[in-house]
Image (cartoon, rainbow, N blue to C red; front, top):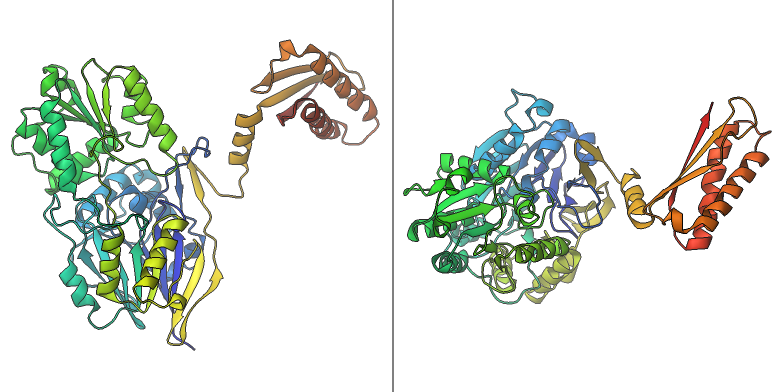
Length: 554
């Protein structure tokens, strides 16, 4: 049997988020990350999207563990749902492990109160997973304790960068460990899997220090309160704000359950320091002068239920916009969220706040490598095979072009789609198949996949509305007891379309009269009303409302 290594991305390729990738060799599988994708505008009512793990469930006895690169939602957010069905150990850098523990506490009932899933790891200490050996190494990102992975396999070394950039002045003092990466790569790299999110951007990514300086200027010059919106897991940004508050005689209150939980966890673990005790509660800052207050909140992506959006809509119980407030959106909109963020910014302006965001001020830098940094990693590792990961398809293609320009042969570069199976052996590498990898939607406590029609139905309702047809008949007889009643929502104003509704009622009565002698009388009427009334309304209005017949026998 030919020895082969299978590389199977289950999420994160052709999209921003939902990162998950499996490596398989004989009877061993390790999984890298398990993230969520934030819903796009057309995903009505969906809270999150997670990867389809049906391939892993069919081989659950082979899965040795899930290894985590860092603690952002798009890399750990799916764990509570994955672990319900695939209860395997999770190995994560210490801060990521803390963030995961906070997240799993909310799901203890479904996961099992006594289950201990999370194993903290340190860089430089290899762990064995069957025929795989994994060693973590430090990289810079927008969260402390971000790591890349060096994975030894029987066929050679696989390097997975995780999300990274090369920042020589990081907030936590831990730059990307290029020396370690060079040492790991000295005997050759079989495969490089590298972050592609900003592969279209020339040059170098700015340091987090630039944001720190910008935020300190904002805080120092603002005459009133300063509100700063960021990701709940952006621990480095929280430290920047705490330091700026201390330097300018302000106190900081955190708003949003996830952000408060993460701050408490990071303080306990030592990833956030507050020597001057500037952190306080939202209730306590209400007693302070406005020019002594900083409020840090969730909602940088315009999430409808987030604290900032509720503040902007005047729906938050504890915080409302005051004259003189300065609001900083310290994030870049995730693709698909631009409209939500723009709407939030407009609402804040309407309330009288001054709003600073990435297009008009340097209040955010991204945590991903630009082209020159990506080139450095490619040159440092000189991989035999290259797979760009993490990003939309154009990002993957741009990264592939960079690799090719630097000498990686075109036939050794694979721009994969979620679900592709790349097989690497001593004889070469090729895509040999495809496994299920479609999105799984989280809607409240419900989970459903592509085969479910709920999302299509919601889109149809949002586009064309619905029409309810009520018809009352004599039980077991052939008599209509009342004129068919038609109720519409989101379709047309019935009161202004009497003639159209009267024609529809005549059609309904005709259907009833024509169907009286048929078997399954009521079922047939329901089916025909959907078809005939739906076709009639489509012809007359050009719209396709959902038709809901209600036949009542009395």
